[in-house]
Image 1: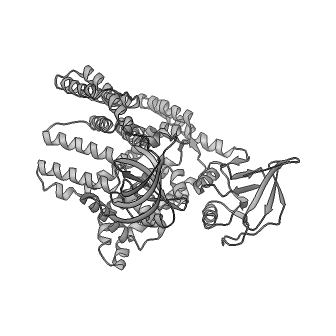
Image 2: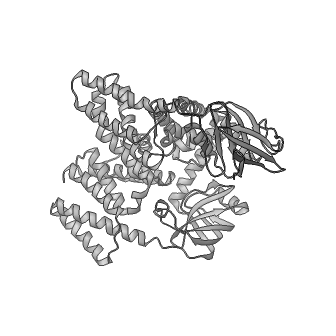
Image 3: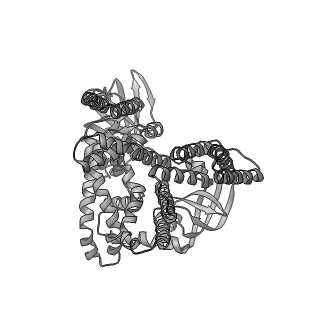
Amino acid sequence: MTDRQVALLAVMVWCGALVPTRVPFALLIALVVLAAISLRQRWPRRFLLVMVLLASALSGRAWAGVEPAQERRFEGPVVLAADPEPTSGGVRVTASIDGERYDLRAWGSPAGGLRNRLMGEQVMVEATLRPLNDAPTWLLAQGLSGRGTVTSVDGFDVGSPHTRLANSIRRTIESGASSMSRDEQALFAGLVYGDDRAQSPLTADNFDAAGLTHLLAVSGQNVAFVLAITGPVLRRLGHRQRFVFVLAVLVLFATVTRFEPSVVRASVMTAVASVAVLVGTEVSSGRVLAVAVSALVVIDPLIVHSVAFQLSVAASAGILLWSGRVARAVPGPRPLVEALAVTACAQLAVAPLLVWRFDGLPVASLPANLLAGPAAGPVMMWGLTGGLMAGLVPEWLAAWLHIPTRLALWWIDSVASQVPLLPLGRLGAVHIVLLFVLGAWGLRRIARLGRGATVVGLFVVLMHPAVVLATMPAETRVIDASSTIWQDDETTVLQVGGRSQPEDVLSTLRKANVGNIDLVIFERSSFANASLANWIRSHHRVTSVWAPTVTMGVGETVPDNNTRLLVDGVVLTIGVDDERLHVSAAIGDEPSAQE
């Protein structure tokens, strides 16, 4: 099969997996046999047709295997399918129970029993299990059968040998980074093995605004770094030994990074390339990507619903298809041009997904990736070498070993926090379409005038979101059901309710291009709101903070009962009691309580 036919195979298998069909097991076996015969006889058209049907049938069987859970009481061992992560004062973890996957939550002492456990470990629990009840497709695609609440945790086992080794590597790296601050440790863990559980909402918002979130979720680049680290060993091995060693390293690294879809995709691509080298066949990078995607979708058809997998495949395809042509078309120093081409093509390829799934692509992502990207690779490579060594030596020596790490982390964090302060806005669907059209037209034009017109067009499209953001009128914005930004040309008041997530508050403030904040009203005094106040002040000048009690230590005061404010034509009335500020909004003489 040609490269184009293999690429078409990946697309058709993907489409087949999106349309699940339940067929008898005998028909499924027949499709497998037909696919093997078609491939052996070199009938590409028949092979493509059979593979679409096979992917659809396998998808149907995968969905049929996600049986809804029955409400019941469970007592016994569970195998953690992911690392426990903090949530709403407790812990959340995906676990396997009797061959089925459950989304478990725990609070209080049971949460303490789960908090320090890692993926692959076996824990004895008591839990109440129940169905998911109309869960979204992306959640069901994770193979979850139900939810559960853990009421007791009693003992654990370290799990299988390879997960034990992977967890030991993670704990050793974590131990070696103990001299760093909490935020530095969180960044370090995200860059080295994709653990973002300890990242603060401020860090998450900064990296999202800078388009750098992918740095904190391991990707194919990390797999390349791992292979580079093992290069001295690989060069001393024969072809067969090298193949076995590469597979072992890939499996171990995939376990360390918790089988992130992007790592799995890159690992399978590396395995396909290794097989080609073993049998003495030259294959293009595009062919390797298509074969890897086809194989992964056939093995796990539900992976097509994973946003992380979609983004990983799109970014890889964009780099392979366009980066070379863009680099050849752009003049300038080769290292800078090539880095720009790779970054721009990857960002443009994932842009449609970001617009569809989220709220667009930040324009700041291009300069931020150019500035922070070169520092991320060394942190990852040093984390798996010097970081491991740091976990085996005294703490004072580990601190010295991590001096380069802390400098690189400072740079990456500075880029993530400072570049988004430029009011560049976000690209929407229309911007993405125009960039695609202008880019394709510019690559086809040979004349210098045509290239110049393309550059001007690209500049105008990229700057348009900044103009829109700068001319955006000051107006009231609802963050969620309990929080609002009350704003007019003279006054900005941020009201934060008790049920709001810090990430939503920070993100809405940034997208609304809010500058100075005259007043922040916290309906409740809490440690979480104290942290949120400090995070808000990191990017905004706050004049006053109101809260029901003076206990947060952020310069808050308690307002007088029934204080009234006029913002954007709305009268805000603040009622005060011992535990809460009650904010009601009224236009004219018609007050209505706002929860």
